Length: 572
Ligand SMILES: [Zn+2]
Image (cartoon, rainbow, N blue to C red; front, side):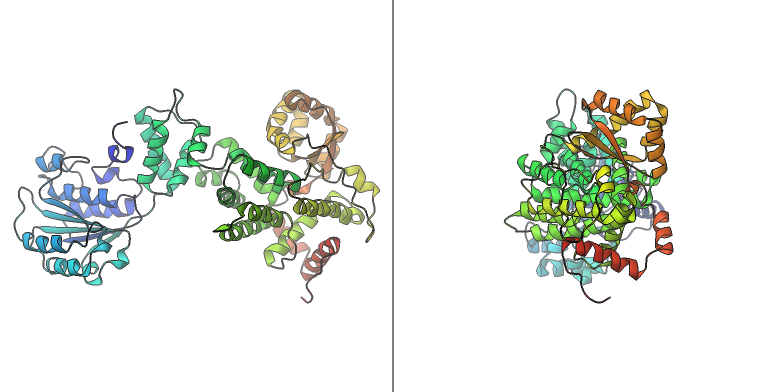
């Protein structure tokens, strides 16, 4: 690749400028109708087409058949001003960043009055215009105020507010913007096609994110990836390594663990993040982005979210829909707050890993937080716990869970896999106030619940081949809750589905599917886990209008507080 991609794909006409239609369309119309102005200001972030557009504007103005938005491409001026062409004597580019431009500005002031050498207009493109010193600006002002008919100025700047007001007020201002991800992705795909290099699905979205919406940055990152492409093109793994992004599998494991309130797996995942050399800050920021994506998925449901997160591979989309459902709106919003706050704390922190672990602990354990979001997510969790077992045992079940979370928060580095409370236990234990020993069974640690959850879609596919009924009971409404030496516990959405599952002896089918797909032979235990799909806005609305109010709010908080031996804030 001899030429950098961003130079090679630099546009020569407005129609080829990416993602700036709000600017290029009115400019094209002005050229078409001949209502051009003598001074323009192109502002906007770096790398989104200001300078290229200034050159295109000059080319369009000076085409022999112009001014026209569609320069002919055949005349001398068009050839001179084509992207990466030799340039024209009548189009003068000055970079205010290199020096104050004082001398150049005086020179310009003197020469501007001479007619153009061979074209219609003498066009000055002044880049980084906000860096014009006062001397240079004043020298220019004279010409900008009363320009000869053949002179046109195009100022380009990232900081239009810093351009002196007397000049700015004489320009037509066109603000350029960062390019939306969808538009940028489509452009990058085109570039890959014309370069003849295959890239794995998922690579382009990584490039788009790395570029932050700048076409120039995106093409420069892509250029680096393409340069290192092997026979089979650019693989997702190579892109991850080069761009330093968090491995999606780690992110999925972390989010799955949060969804399952599974502290042990979550902290193990953090350990893997650090062990594999990922930067904790980067991981936190990726996690925050994922939570944001999940909020979008949660808000839009189904197909509509696909048009916003269109760069997601389909299987990833499906996984995220599932995750969003299980975590719930209130918990997502709260997790986002915690992650964002933690990210700020990480700036300059000497122990970012510690902060990452604290973030995860807080996401798992919403207590001592009397904000509305904190309350809401506590209620969500209590409702889930209550729905797992009858009222008398519900506090026991959430106690077991809470104790487990507490434990995993305390001993982040030595946790082993811990199962959620098993169904049998919930039935036999009764809550006692102080003395109830936490009997959460411990497991040697060789059961990777995250791996099991990853394999779940394949298990379901296998079930489908065995028995359609079992498949239909599981496919949209079940999840893996835990695994230990004796059983794999499956959460199923409601009591009816659980009953059908048991009556139809579907556990044998599922057990065999697990043996086939994962090679793990375990008894199947089933519990009702309504958290799987009770988080639709409609369902929540019904709940809110039927039930709670302050009383429930308080009792919910008090219950959790009692369990943790914490003090509830008085009042309210
Ligand atoms: Zn031409």
